[in-house]
Length: 507
Image (tube, rainbow, N blue to C red; front, side, top):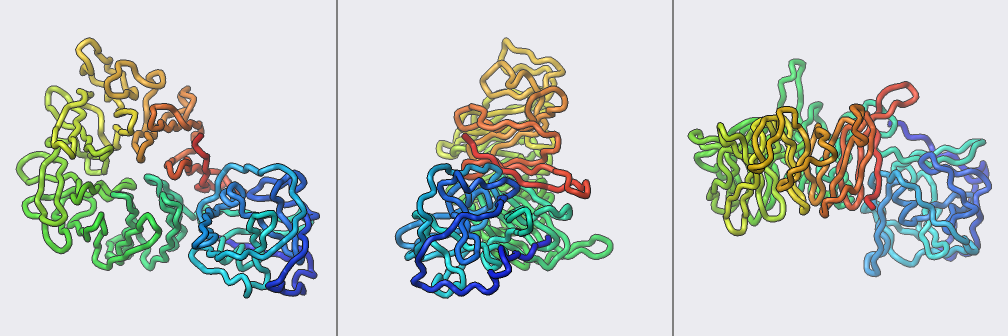
């Protein structure tokens, strides 16, 4: 990814004297146009405008300005101001109003940027406080080294851009899974956690596979030869706080356990903290962006079999290795999505033979197994086609003529989205192409080119549609921290499809 050198706002900027610790005075409004991620900033109407001091442009660290350029800030009396890099928001929300006198002072509180403590007294161009807001200097140190932005200055004015790691490079890839944002170019990875923390992995291998499970992100790093035979280099576990723990022998850190699978893509033995779970094979399904393992009350939840009976959802006690079969005879396609953990219960699809399939619920507190509904025998293949949030259980009917209720018969063309317990299909009977849940949200994809007005719909915890959009080039969507992140392929100047991240706040 190309990074453009920060160009001085005027030739005299290179000769500007450092600002002393007792700096005082007034800043000025820029006399040139400023564009932030392609949007012109109207400094004449902004309450907190960009400012110029000692020939250096300063950027206001307001909530919306920071988010728009991919920064997240927090402030406490004890720790001061903390700024971390994340992905840029797609929403520009300037706070308009009188800008005041632009009188400056030096911040008296601690400041850290991406974990780096800033000694403001030693900065050639220090951070300033203007109108009660912290302002950062747009110098190479902050713009390039700490924020990863691109800037340019010419006769048209100043432009400041944050593309994220993928930028405008068609060789970069972005993926979104369960609130995690993963961007990588070559051997460089940037992972943004659901908590907004950022982790970086500089890999040595040339082959990778990844997945999210049990609240963590896992990156399997391999070395591939000319015949695509793979040798494990390392397994990396990224925690929600952004820390990374790596293992050279394939260990995954799930809950409080160090877990190893004989086969991450099929069936095999599992060891927990160095001990093998006897008599069972397990399906971690480390594919399709999901590690199909979860943790609840000191137990690992995952699909497996005992070489005698059919596939089941099991709970394995991390300390004792005691196993309990929760839901037997589940639909299993070896690509993930065998079960969903939500609200203290496990949901899965049980094969009932000639009677079709049943949506089952296992209450982890009471140990009660109950049938929610009978559904089509053709559902739940190849992708997870049921999802759960506090508003209900959503599933795609499979097309066979099996009753949901005694009085309701579905036709052999019924491939609609239903909510358990309701007779009528949702969204006019449109067929979802993908369906999954992330926390309290259900995400459904449709084909908007076939006449349906939305490509993706997000259903909130109350059952309301909280987000909808239509774009045939939309490929992924995830929900994190009150916002929707989308990956959409956008043509660049060379007409190459570039994976581009967008963000929209949930209202």
